[in-house]
Length: 187
Image (spheres, rainbow, N blue to C red):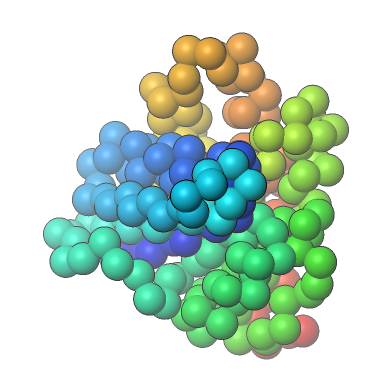
């Protein structure tokens, strides 16, 4: 089994950190993994994305053309990655910032107001973990507990005070995904 995931948004949304947490959790679970970041020169506010490949076997290349799943945090990311997700794949959309609905009917969709959920949890920056939780609820390549363990390992010291909120954000995203899920072809 090999799963390719793209996480995309703009700098400052925790895109790269979300990918690192998934990659670290996969490594701790004994999987083969790649994490491949890409971001604009302006960093905060510019475009940012990363790909994470999780596999039971050796990974041939970190490049991903047609991911099985994508987390998109804003409209430009939705515009770019919606056409690239494999048919039957999963598109997790931050409806707070997407500005439009998903047009494809051959992919599964979780569209949730991740920014508002994060704000209700006390910090808008938690939206990345809300989205990771939503992804894992519909594509259980890792358990929430594995990702929580990776968070505890990877959280920078300066943000340790946010650990409990990040874990809560993961769980809330997973819960919200059960409500916001639309299977392929039923739309």
